[in-house]
Image (cartoon, rainbow over all chains, first blue to last red):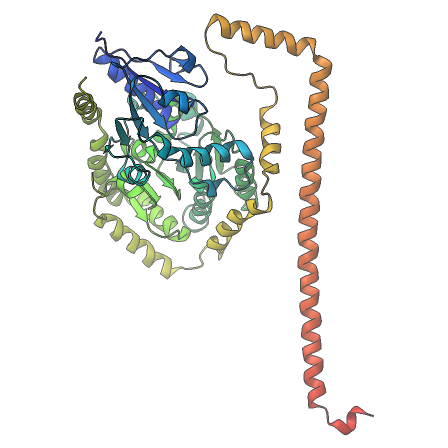
Length: 357
Length: 151
């Protein structure tokens, strides 16, 4: 192994979380280059078979590089950015606090602290990376000078982990049209719009259909409760499945089952599930907010207005017409190639070379 | 990496969807989805202190263990917490009862709030009715000849 260590820090590292997946994947790619690489966070854990160490165990030196992932505020940031290592910030965006109305203090405070605290660390890092041009603008606005786009690195487990057979057995072959939403159950994701579009789809196009909503509701339990009430009010109980946090195998199974992928988010710094859906050959229907158009690179079907019945009609055309579906999937495959493992490996090599590693 | 130009395929499909929508604007239901979405999003404003979220957390997180790394320290921690849980059974029960009290208080407040909204809407409806009747009576009165008014 080389003497240079390239370590990473994030507030918390979870399996299934977009940032957590990228951290574990980057570690594997760095280790494949014979570089020493460990992951640190506020809380120790085991994520996707990797031990995440507590920050107290970190011993940096000037020869080492520390990639600091920035999305939620950490009380340790002052210590992390003061570490003697060479620091690289990887910015994943911070959700605006307006989306956290009706949430108790801690989550909203962390989001506010993350937005306010960003400019404070501009002089501590030698390079600031962002997963999209949209995110890069935030960094430039915060006064960072050496800003570069480093597109999100997809987890290898997307292809390596076979889909969960129990999920496939339960839902496959019943003739229902499956729509899928993937992401944290959070107000900025506007999952209520997906439920409304699905209601329109059921009413206008195909009553024999189902909506899977796959994602964790940790710290947003009240939003989940309100979504469940909306589902009941619309008479969709039994047609909408809230899966909760799912394993990679289960997520892969839901992508396999899906006939269409929906995203109505009003704030996205990147939106990884869009790429995952494209890789699983699921037609993407999304509201064109923030970084979404940039992420899908011209593929998928984007809507500049939230017209639920219009979206339902568009989904109806694609799920019933194989010609339309194939045209969309062809464009999506071309776009998804940008995020291939080979392309990611090349981008990481370029990054390390620019850092002299 | 620049933002790609809008995809022609998407524009074409949206146009097909729009045409279909125009042909059958109210098929299935005439629900105003925009209004429903706006109403849904405005609700959290009624709960600025996040009482609903706190109660939802209490409902979903009862009895969850703290992070448990696969180390000797982690396993020892788990053992100690298990032990503490059993030894302090009387305190755990008291905490559960307090959680139940919070839940009951929240649901009672929610029910009262809903009742209040209902009564307010009913009152507004009655006021509108009374205003309409007053307007009608005023109109009739204005049509009546002044000499008949005294009769």
